[in-house]
Amino acid sequence: MLVILSFLMTGVIAQNVQLHYDFGKDRKFPTTTVEMFKPDKWGSTFFFVDMDYNVNDQKGVNMAYWEIARAINIGKTPFAFHAEYNGGFGSFKADPYNGAYQINGAWLAGVDYIYNNADFSKGFTIQVLYKNIRDKHDAAFQLTGVWYMNMLNKKVTFSGFADFWREDFAFVDGESIEETKFVFLTEPQLWYNFTENISLGTEIEIGSNFGGVKGFAVNPTIGAKWTF
Image (cartoon, rainbow, N blue to C red):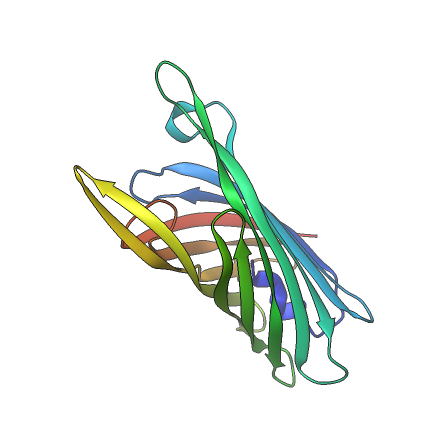
């Protein structure tokens, strides 16, 4: 989500494609990410699309997820109105038939606070959002923090996001059922930028009650990125 926020206040259009290999427990699969950020005189538009491949011997894309967000500047202040949609779907292999599932669509709205230092080498965004999760929660919330830091003459970029939101899940362990009410997810990324276009690095997904896994989980990747 968030390498591109280093361009947020500079007026630069940013697009990139990432390829990650996930080394997490019970994962071992590749993921591609396409991101775009485009500012205009009213604010900015951002989206990304994630796709997982070949999970559990499936032959091709088995999960697709996207987010699209629009920010509308509030005058010349560091604040902006924020509107967003999240959603996706996936499939799984089972006997005797394969199956599919939906990632409940969610609509979010709220306010962004955006900070960048004088030379745009580092900055952060804080989002306070109302969240409607279709057929699940009419009124929930999400708190999001996003950051970036360019170091060593822009050769190294440290960036990422952290989300905390309200969503109920029920995890079945044998005959017992444990219900949770909150989800936490953060994905820090560290990139070495060989050129303006080519980067190699890593992303570490750290979650709690995320992605069908109860409690705390850490899933590291190794990745490559092409910035257009």
